[in-house]
Image (tube, rainbow, N blue to C red; front, top):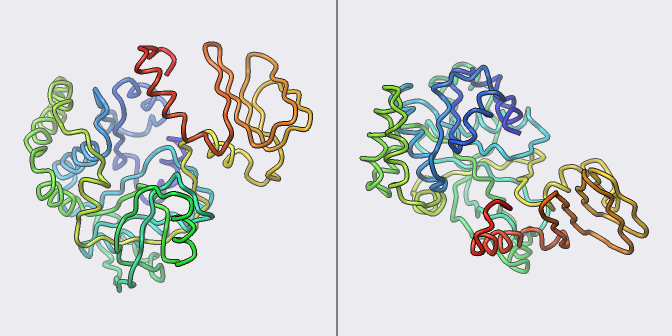
Length: 337
């Protein structure tokens, strides 16, 4: 999925302008997956601190190596996007809005009252004229005609009845966590809302530019653990959303993985990796490469069987696996995570 994320923007951004921030343990695999990306563009976090420190650090680094007028696009690497061409056009429209001084997010056209996503409430349209310049070159001319809307507010993951109200009213989009802004604008937002991180960013960037990765290990864990949405996006004044019906999915749960794998198939078909014998079993996701799984009379179930643990739950409850994770952490069973 990391390769697919990079491939989607290869017509817009050359490899030397791609930057990846990941857990330090994953730096080597990332280098293998993206050999064309310069080694110095892959930054390893010694510890997870949520999205705000990651985005802020990369903005500070890009300010140093690319300049303040650079358009920075934040793309999580666990997304499935089926319409890559429309996605690129969406990013071009977002880049125009970013150059006009907006913090921009991509709003996914909702397919139903999903409770696993945050929502964006949109407002009036914004007239954005293509600038033609900046970090993405002449390709920006292809962005005309894509709507850009003001953001009224961000909504937390709702209960189902609230999500149904959003869809009935209209003007609501799923929040995909993709953000676009100029580096200078992002830096100003961090200085306004998270000024306590500035000294840490400066030290780490100095170390990265000088090849001293030890500074990252020393300083990064001192940064506040907080999400970009909560710390900045929900508080910023000029925020815009570009609606996008791009065949998007966030593979953040087993149920979402089932949606992705079942694309183009009937919803009652089982998705199986491994050996499965089923009688009167429909819409199941079964992962069991090591041994046979037999089921009788089950609908919309998830079964994940690995050498050291087995997970069984309804698809509708797959988001609740986080409670199992917390229980395992409390028991000290970190080897099972």
